[in-house]
Amino acid sequence: MKIRVPKWTIGLIGLIAVIILPVLYFLPESPQKTDPARYLPEKPVHVDHKDIVEGEFASGQDVTRACLECHEDAATDFMKTTHWTWESKAFDVPWRDENVTIGKINQINNFCIGSQGNEVTCMACHAGYGWEEGKATQQNKPENVDCLACHADLGTYAKSKYGNPAEDVDLLAAARSVRAPTRENCGKCHFDGGGGNGVKHGDLDESLYFPRENNDIHMGGDLNMQCTDCHWTENHQVLGRMLADNYAIDPAEQVSCEQCHVNQQHEDQRINTHLSAVACQTCHIPALALEDPTKVTWDWSQAGQEGREDDHFTYLKIKGEFTYDKNFAPTYLWFNGNNEYRYILGDKIDPNGITYINKPAGSIGDQTAKIFPFKVHVAKQPYDVVNKYLLQPITSGEGGYWSVFDWDQAFELATPITGLNYSGEYSFTETHMYWPTTHMVQPAANALQCDSCHGNNGRMDWEALGYPGDPIEWDGRE
Image (cartoon, rainbow, N blue to C red; front, top):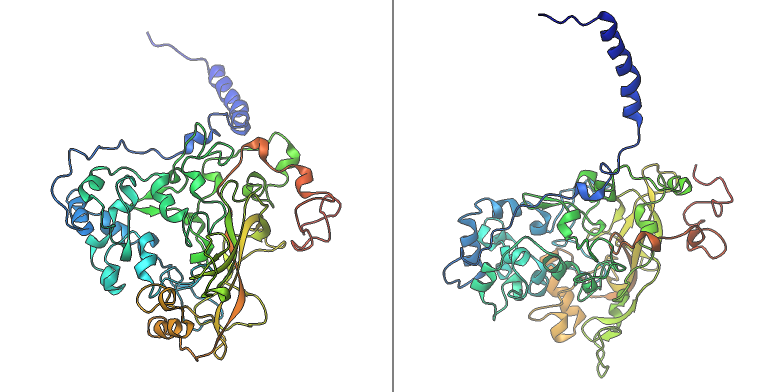
């Protein structure tokens, strides 16, 4: 018997759909949908390699060849990444006639200055072997990819001169220990960049190997997140770019809080009104270098003094004078994710003013910019008095400054490598470099409060940010 549905029933269903569906669409997302843990990347189950890897390994390259027997495309994929090239794509910058690339491989900073010609030491933080043969020989040698740097248990593995394994490393034990990268693998280079623990960043140091929750809410406590939980990775391409090594940064290549904190609003609507102009990091990273100090000044002009005692935090003969600081407030600037300027090797300078190695882009009138926290590193570094550009010396290796303490020789040795002529006259000039602050995120209870920024004792320099005064009293952003 065929059941007939009254026509009015069909109409009722349609009416309900018209009323109910829009209501459901505009309801707030359920807690499950905005739970940050739902957006963490799924990781494959690790296969223990201790019973898989066999044989004797005479070199790091032998280990890589063994890895490639199963992971056939791993090296070629990795060689397409900036972790390998240390170089950006070519940018059209307004002050140069030709496109230029930017990266550790060919540009300078105001810490150890530059890697060109200094591969003997710098490449201990490069995921590659065989740098005594030079950059050109790296291009077509997949066996020079150092799989162990990112995948071995660092209790079994260490790197040394020209990126090669340290002499006492048991390569078989290291190869059998491989696993997904951990904070220890990433931190070996990123926590100790620039010459030691915490030197460069201010928000990355060895306290993050085993941090407390109050040191970093993501990496500490029960979450115990790894770097790859935020720096999503596919085919060895790791999300995340730094101002130091780029000019313009594609947002699709960057890491953001919103990857996991999707559509999350604060309970206090007054805080939500800040979201269009204030970065998450500004409130949730109230201080830098919480436990371990970070370098804030470096004066190369004082290097080479005889009879002065070396101390890692104040003076080293090979590097000059330093100051460190800890648990201090960042510097705040408008930032849209790119560089307004990045010093390119050979750019002319005004030695009587400040030379900016990089300068974050953004302003109060830039609708894509937000107030963002930075560490500022101030240095005195060498420049050519006649040619008026910053100089990159040869510091390590035979004849380098760290061996003979002769600046003239250090600059002469660099000339055929960097392509910069040296006039024979040098002096030192002040440079500034900015490092975005994105780690050491605090628990919500430690976030900045209203009076942290507003009022007589607020930490913001409102006029420097482009306001006529404290925006709690003025109609601020235009």
